[in-house]
Length: 240
Image (cartoon, rainbow, N blue to C red; front, side, top):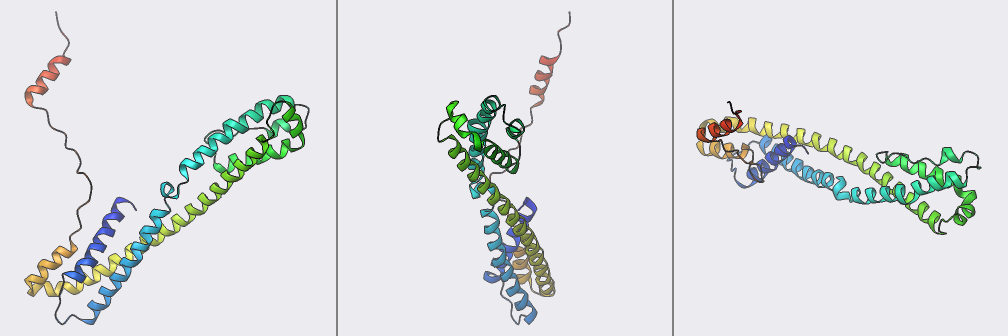
């Protein structure tokens, strides 16, 4: 959620809590009870969507560091080495130069995985030649396993991004529905606040948006006139 959505979410949740705990209406109309219950349903749904959205964020899905680690190792320890050595050792092999190409470090996961798969397929018939040139016997197995792991994470990441977009859309729609429900309740309460001071006071508190949490922004202190004049005097060039 962005800052505006967070404030709307906090206001709706706070209003629902205060409606249940603080507002007491005598002879409340059926419509009031109906929309009060509807607001409670909105809040339950919003909390579930908020939790789901939070869990789908990249830093909570534990993808970022692992993906960066795999990408770096795949390029530096396998693809670059295989490209530089393979082009010389296998220069007689048809199409090998086109197959042994390393994508840029900022290439997408899909581009990197595709290039790695092309490399592995191209050198498959020449593994004995490459091993005799100095590659370890486990090099190609490790290269293949790392490529599969990055492909799996990249696929999972793509699915997560799709789910995140869906949940975000549903969350915004739910926020809009809850806001409209709160407006209807406000309209119902409007008539009561005119002739009931206690209801008016409580209802004003219900609609008050909760304060933002966290450390308040630091205010810059204004320099005194003496300090400013001293600063300017230091900047002025000396004249003969």
